[in-house]
Image 1: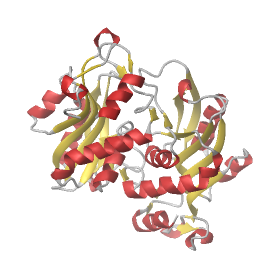
Image 2: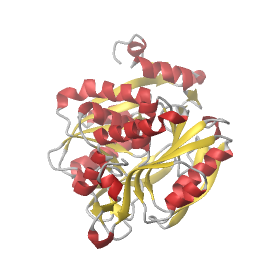
Image 3: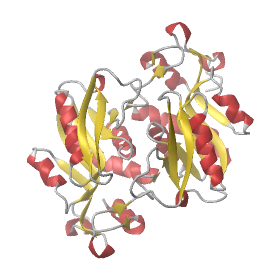
Image 4: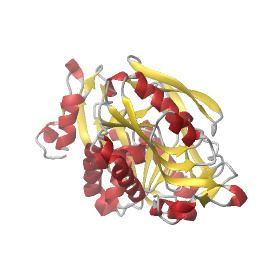
Length: 198
Length: 198
């Protein structure tokens, strides 16, 4: 997606070979116009899938997920990283490991918001090793619903997440695919630079 | 705001005299179309204030804040409840108490996203005792920016938050004002029932 790649080039900060900081427009400060375009891009790709619900993970997945929900006309559910006082019963839960935060955490979704046979689109801000997306997939499948696709804003394609999701039979669509963060530089896949894929 | 009051009547659950559960459309499952209308309602009211930035608190403030940001054409910054590995330096921080969660927590914003003299609109999902909104106000003022208004989705008007914010000289605009949750029933202010105010 052209506008996203441009934004990453202009405002992304390469911290090291594994970390790209995008807090200027995605995960601390948010650019609402870019989020709207991101939501529309997800909707164009997943429109054929008869999506009935979007599932994401708080907090940085919420903005792109809500914009995709608006474009597709479906509700969004965000999994919580912490149980609230009003989320105690009838929950789906699983453990995911965050390499960025170097900690394990449990994530929670209320059972009442994912029904059997729903066609769920999972959306997240980043795909790296696939922990969050696979954890969300487990929750959706535990509810006997189907994951019809995984929509990712920024994929670190040099890590194994995409392949793990494909091995699970999932349709992964990433709006920006980063080939490398070496030499303090963001390198995208060539097809994307040329606008072929995104 | 008519659509919001209808949604609260249909899908809100009164847990006790103090707790209204709205996880069906606001803070666990999200209704994107309603969020868009909420964003537009905030924009209509605060349009006159020359807002340059919206500040909210993760996670439930993000959806209404991003929609308001889209409608007003300004970026959104969400304060974090946890320091991330990439949010260590140049931060604004303060402590807020959550009565719902019965715990104190620190909230964080990167200094680089709130500039001196910015005209900041604070948006949050709930206003009860005012802890979160007042904490966000402290952060904005610590950055030498101005809080030009507080936009709230649901106000529990029987608690003291609104008055505390007004006493600080702030312009508080709530889309739903709940007078009481007694007898397992949501009672709104009469003016709102009649559509006068919202």
